[in-house]
Image (cartoon, rainbow, N blue to C red; front, top):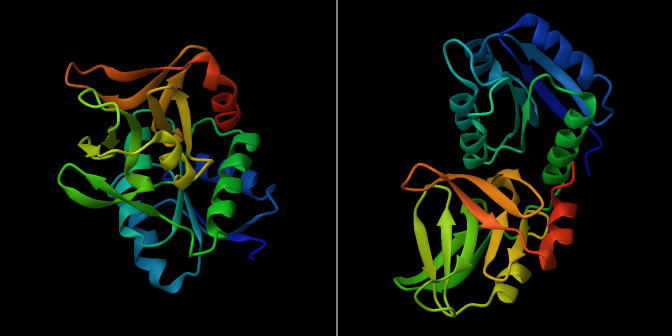
Length: 239
């Protein structure tokens, strides 16, 4: 098991880059390999760099952080940005975390811990489940799921909202069966009829959860947080 994550830092604004480097130097699990203030320069040097994690801004001249992350294969990415609008896109490309500026040490430490945990997970960790759908069998990847709800047409079936905005109808499967297969830290039941992926959540309060997903009326999907499942949910999303 690695004791440190080799890390690249990228921010086109030098004060922000300097501040981020200063924070990272206070986190024992991080070894800074190199810092960049130009995304295109980082791309040209990547073949010669050995690293595990990229901590990057998003809005930058030339290549933005989201497109850069998609070009870097099999590397962990944490975004640090002044803008909240890109969170859904960041998680759709499986970013480890999304931090809004100004970055606080405690918040960065939490993100690094998540990256460290993911990095040291065995490669044999299951990433999908095989299920029956109304169109045949499917391999449902955990990273694709935003939420799962009881089907309106048949309570024995479940409807899954995927990260690309499409829906999948799972045939004759119980929530208990699904929850036994889903990664426990990443999914939570919020009421009798719905399970949500933690990464899909935009806002929440004591009684409801608002997702990043926009419905046809251009409003965010909202789920009821019932008293039965509230305690477990709050433990999973605790900052």
